[in-house]
Every structure is written in structure tokens, then in C-alpha cells.
Amino acid sequence: MDVVGKSLSASTTANNLDCGSSVKVDGSGNVFVGGSLVDTTYYDANLNMLITKQFAFVAKYSNGGVQQWLKKFGNDEKDNINAIDLDANGDLYAIGMYKGVFNVGGIALPNGASTNAFVAKFNKLNGNTIFAYQLGVSAAEVEGWGIGVNQQNGNVYTSGNYRGSCAFNANTINPQGVWDIFVVLLNNSVIQSTNDIVRDFNIELFPNPTTTTLSILASNDIDLYNSTIKVFSSDGKLMNKSRVLSDKLIDVSDLKAGNYWLEIVNDGKRMIKLFSKY
Image 1: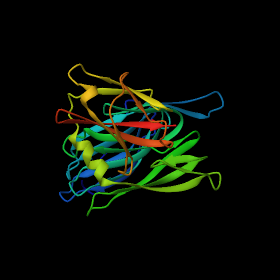
Image 2: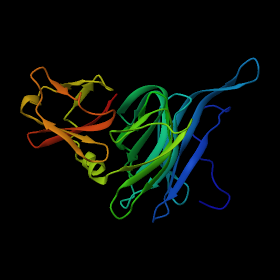
Image 3: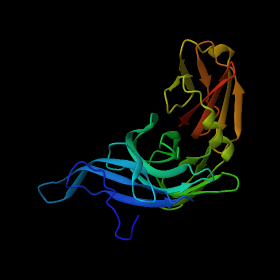
Image 4: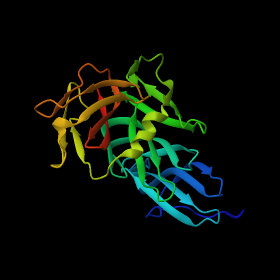
């Protein structure tokens, strides 16, 4: 990009409040940006500004300012990317927050009436989502503000704040004040395993979030009863290993509140799915 700069706005209306919250540059001079795009902004009778359809976005531009790709997701006033970073391979990590229904490139995260934090990873070449999940489980609010990738071992560090009791990596943290700070490590062993997902190996977990059991809905070519099931905490610790029960249920009642990865291995194929336990 030249010193004059270029407009990277992608909103569809003139009365928007688009925001570029974070920027990173790779070794080839490509520029990655994260933030929010507002499609509708209006004012009430008292001239209070109201925002609807705010999308989180990530984008990549060449060193000449030409857009390579742009991905946006969400549709609520809280959806936003607050910080991004690149790993040693040049893939993009992002942290932000969302409210309500939220889908990141085909990966649906647990619905939340309050503000929720999330972490996602995107392919550097096309912006496709590699993985995404809710960061922290709280009945109140969780906000994700900072992210950093260790270039040597691929571990990801996240930071933000939360209100009320909140579960991270299966550990519940009680509040010390009105808002408290968190720093959470995401182990590379779990992050890298998501790259092994077989796309035609489709399963759904419900209810998600859950309190006691998970039901598994799989395509007809997957024999769940002869599959190996493993549950990992979000920092990579193996929590249990089991088989699917006769009614296609998995008992998770002994897990603490938090986010977990469910791994299913069947006939040499793997599928890893995120679920939350309340």
C-alpha cells in the first residue's frame, strides 16, 4: 500500500460505522485486517444511535492493496474481531466476541444471550475457517481482546475480561471484582488436530451446550458403535475415552463446566467437534 492509503470498507450502506481493530503483515508484505462491518445504523426519536447487523470480518490484501479475500460472519450488534495474529505458517488467528446466533465459515458456535468470546483460525490462501470455538463459558459476559501465537511451538495465548463466574479449560474462575481479566493458553496439540478433519465425515451434537449427555447424529456410512470416542479439554488434556452408548449418547455428566473437543475415529477417519458443558 502507498502512503496515501486505500479504503478497505465493505459495508453496503452509507451510514455505517466500520472499524478495523487489528492489522498484521506477513513476510511477503501481505496485510491481514480484522474488525467489524456495520450494514445498518439508525437513530431513535431521542437521537440515540442504534446499530443493527454488525458483522465481524477478517480480510487479506496484497502489499499493493489488492483484496485477496474477505470473510464476514454474524449479524448482531456485538459481533466483532478485536485482535489477530499469524502463526509460523502464515495462517490467521483471530479473537473477538459475539452475541446470539453465530456461525464462522460453517462452524456454528453455541448461542448466547449475553456477550461471548470466541477464537478462530483461517487459511491464509483463501480465508476458509480451519476451526472456531467459544472461549469461556459464563452466565454473564466474556469478551476476547488479545491473541498471540508462539512462533516456536504454535501455542496460542488469549486474553480478555469476564463478568461473573467463568469456566476456562474446564476450570471455573470465580469473580474478584465486577470485571476480571483472563489469560488462557490454547495448546497446539488440540489446535493442530483440527486440520485432520475429514469433510465428508459429518456429525452433529445436541444439545450443545449440554449438562449431562450428548446425542450424536451421524451420516449413514459412519458406524458409531465401532468408533473410538475421546474428549479433550481445550488445552489438550485427555478427559475420557469411551464408546458410544446403545442409544447414541455420550455421558459427560462428570465434566466440569467449560469447552471441550469431542474426537471420533472411525475406519481411519477423524472428526473433531466442539461442545460446551454447563
